[in-house]
Amino acid sequence: MNDDEAVQQAKLRWGSEAYVRHEAGAVQNRFWVGIQDGVLFYVKGAGYSWEEAFAMADRDMRRPA
Image (cartoon, rainbow, N blue to C red; front, side, top):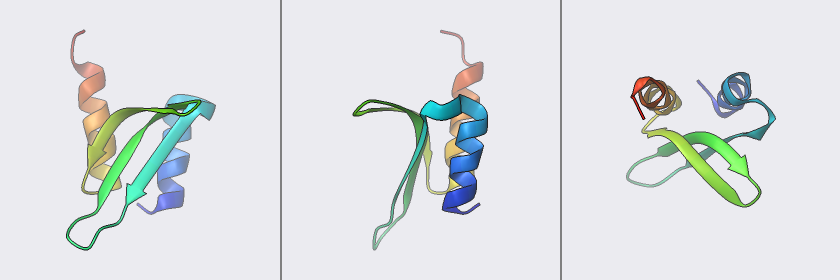
């Protein structure tokens, strides 16, 4: 999945407030997905790929509150 596909996937899941962030680093890449509310970013999933970040978001949705 590339960055554009990640944005589209997030918008399908969470609507217009969806937000994704990719931090490329020399040692590792980090990917975050979630919701942007003003300046706050509520992370729903994180990982070393877009797929891993969305998988974490899926797991957290099934976890009881």
